[in-house]
Image (cartoon, rainbow, N blue to C red):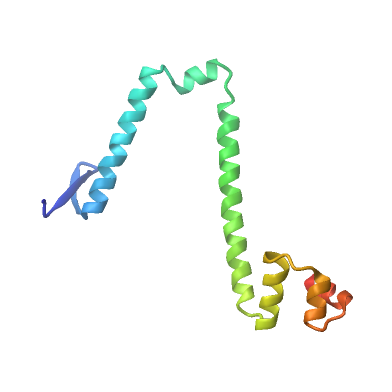
Length: 123
């Protein structure tokens, strides 16, 4: 087994870990495979444009999906940081209401809240 692994970057060889080395060459092989497949099937960006395939729309939709994923993750992090500041009762109410789908009426009885007050606290 080899002791040193090197990859070329900008014409220079850099020593890396075995994991980085394998990923680098695997990535290169994947690019060659896709290129060979495109040539074999006569696929190209220009051919898609000539066939009136909505390439720009597909790219735009993919970018929008990525943007939504990022926004969702940021919001989840914010919610999790806010939940840390809640009391144990408040945390259990949120868990039962949103994750276990327990009704407001049942929770109001369990925690001795008036249903209307419970609905206000929920907001």
